Length: 467
Image (cartoon, rainbow, N blue to C red):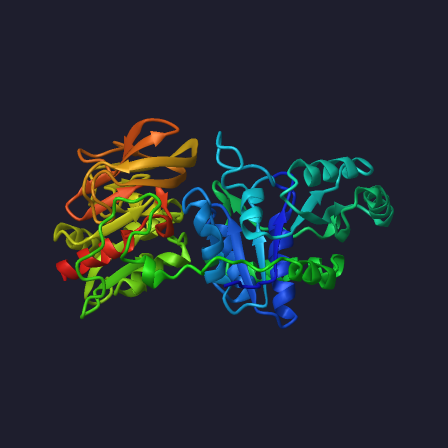
């Protein structure tokens, strides 16, 4: 079986070159032209996919070869891109930058090879002219398996500057597919962990995406880019299916046990935190929960004073609760309900922002008080991939289960781990982290459940048993 989905990878020599602007603008420009566009992001980033979703009207999806395994990248891509006319994949960092100390693993180049996709290199040309040819030649020739098939020049200063750049690149053999002017750069607000999420910007986010699309339409050859996407060969992998993945381990970082009842007769309600304070979520998590038999109901801890009716389990993912600490604290009725649910032993999964919300306090503001810890902002960024093992049985995995995840935060909790930690990190450093108590599993570690066989089904089975 083979599947032919036109596709492009938008990469750059380094972070800050403008690939998010170009990728998001290209997605919207294709969508405005009447194409069904599938948006993807290399790596663990949650924020860029929100802008991708706004640009295309489809869920932004991540392709992370570290957390999910290289063997699942093409299947996950095919799952997300089903029925689309074209797929645009935004890279991460520089083209060849991947998991620290592990070669090409999880780099944009690695994912491009797994997808057999042509790469368009977005180059910040603001401080160079003829040297751009040497830069592009180096990136195009570094790995013969990576097909750097076009260049988009970003931050071009003038017509004369553009002419010099194009002349220099004539001999490189890599065609120039666009030139975006420096004076037209779109400002997208950022703070301590990157761009401000779409859910927090509303009108401003829409305007930013429209401006990015305008930049791409004015400066890029859309027909040439679409033709390049169509040059990608068919993929022979089978698409990832949440239904088959939800309850049956299929290799990889195993150790999970399938539930005894993968599809409960009376679907338990799994409440999932949403809204401006909790914007970090992988689309596959909801799909896996539903495939395992759950009824997934979102709620907003900023405004909803009660959990959804019949809540039997709770998932509180990442986000920016530190920005909304006063408002979250003021919603005392919901905080008390969360604490009461946790006290019954119901499965409660908290990742990063969820960990802060379950703590006694966040920057001095009372939180749910489920965990014997206090959280605060710090001046230190904790960032990177982690290998971990479950220290104790918990709602996501039995003790001994090995996972790969990602940390990304500027907060700390005191203490950093409970009497029963959530994880024991084995790489790149050895330490324990997080909390397991009753049905609660709270940790800073973000885990992509598509790379954790049986996690969603185990959670749903626990919810069904509790309900």
